[in-house]
Image 1 (cartoon, rainbow, N blue to C red):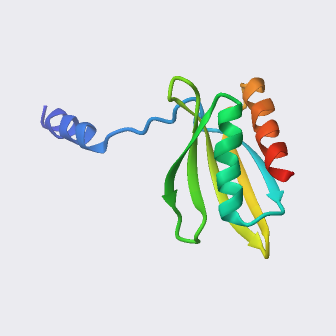
Image 2 (cartoon, rainbow, N blue to C red; image 1 turned 90 degrees about the horizontal axis):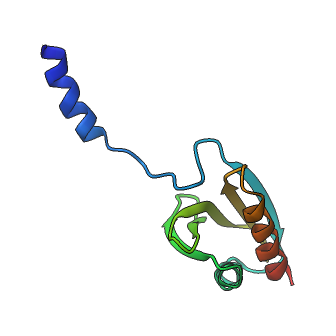
Amino acid sequence: MNKLLILFPALCLSGCVDLGKVGTHPKVASFYINHPKSQVADCLMYASSREHLSLEFDDTLPDGSERYNLKDSDYTDVAWVEVSKFSGKQTSVEFYYAPHDPGLHKSILSIVDQCKK
């Protein structure tokens, strides 16, 4: 009985994380774009809207890269995006997304193609 009294508050305090549609084992797609990081982030936001998605800033990571959440029309996270300076004017973009969504993969490729121009 004492164990149950301790278990309930522990479960309440531990919380949970909403992974959206990304899941616990996301697929990773990495791209390099020949533009500065700020320009790439702006382009990703614009290109996402053209794919009927939205890109929202989440956090700046300790290494200076920026993390974003890619959301669908229901405001559910469908991908996590990390944007970081790679070298000179080159920027690294990594998408973490659900492997079971081929439509999202096509949207990601379209977003990146628009920003590589």
